[in-house]
Image 1 (spheres, rainbow, N blue to C red):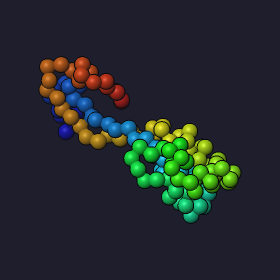
Image 2 (cartoon, rainbow, N blue to C red):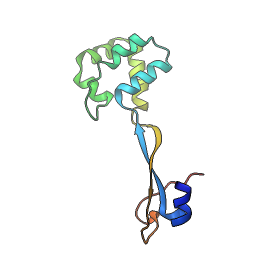
Image 3 (cartoon, helix red, strand yellow):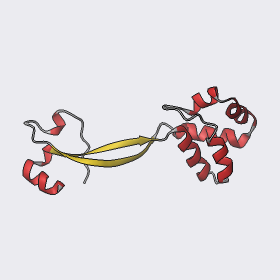
Image 4 (cartoon, rainbow, N blue to C red):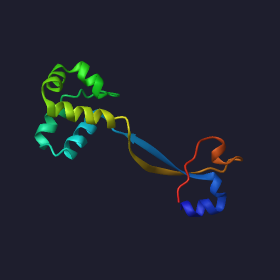
Length: 119
């Protein structure tokens, strides 16, 4: 379908929309724990201490959750896990193509929005 619409309307008027995911606080703790080869139950207990709120960061979690802060201050493994996770939490996790969009506007897409051309 995308090839047909591109041929019909022109490459500069057809685009795919992508999203960029970021590493959320709980998810990055779980991912780092898995990479560091900590047991699932151990990492799960730490991740569950991170409050489930929109825009939660590990710094906010350490401020809001006394038990997480206590474990961070007193357990070297927890501190290493959280410190590593902090360096990754705001980074891009993935880029996903969500849908395609055909536009028959008078101006090319790049006139209205930044574009990333691949392939």
